[in-house]
Image 1 (cartoon, helix red, strand yellow):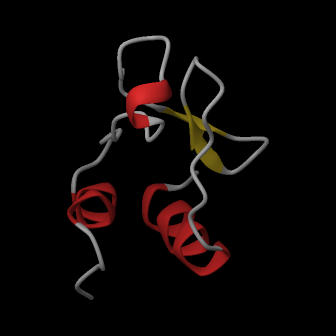
Image 2 (cartoon, one colour):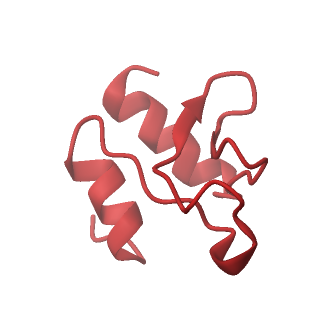
Length: 67
């Protein structure tokens, strides 16, 4: 299945891929790579930004990579 964005495509095809912070100009940490937050089931940045991927995408991501 082709994903809607390059980041989603990378998340689904490259094991361990982590996108950059999505806070753009507001990130106080210099736009680092995000990390998977198991509790939130989203990607987070140390600046406090949290991704907002829809539940159906997250369910496919977790199933693909055993999260």
